Length: 332
Image (cartoon, rainbow, N blue to C red; front, side):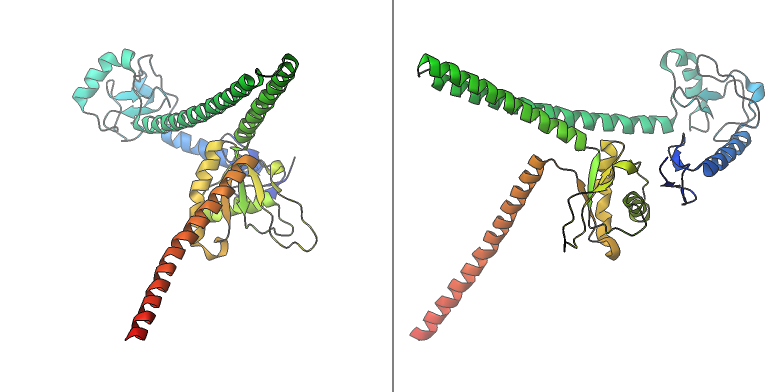
């Protein structure tokens, strides 16, 4: 088992794994956390488990002394159970009028009830799914357009080849089919590479430290400046490129996260690094495919050329004005 840094005690140990609490903890910190949770559950419940009926209304009121949030003494008609988290709430703790509760009690078998926290979390998950679906639709549309362009080009080449002899036409059609297949294969490879790299980020400007793993350096950077603890695969973290003799430049660090959503959120937060002098030269970017990297480079070149051209126009005007002033002074 590889050695990792515990998120609680900050020590590097062999027993650090991803626990049920979604944190990477060592065995000792996990057991201590579970013990504290047991104490908290006992202090919150103040008694045995509550019997919840099929309608989502608490039925065993003898075992429940107060509401979970407002601490109001439970009554046979005052408690609600969330359909998602199974939490028990007094209707006053969720700011519900008694008349509203009485109406809900009669129809809750059909409608059910969800607490405000679960509604908020569900809304966030729905928004994330919608954005992911929109991105997927855009990628599918782009792929369809690429396939259509390849088919159109192939058809045009096929029509031009039919005007030649039969033997030449047969050989040309074979070449076109092979070209079509190779183009489609290249498109599929590009899409597969893009899908595979969505969970990756590339960190530029993060200098290595002797005796410290690159994965630990990245996690320390996230904890100190980005206020997050991403779940990464330390075995897949590596420096990109080959170091040659006399090359003192810092190699980029490839980091593999658990999901593409985590990678996007991390890139969004990385702008705060510009506000810290010690890490202002550290950049967190997407892991681009070779085709995407080439397109990004060409776009940067076009932007630089446009800026240079826009800067040259005022300079020409200023030179022309100075020449006109010189001519006027000579004439006078």
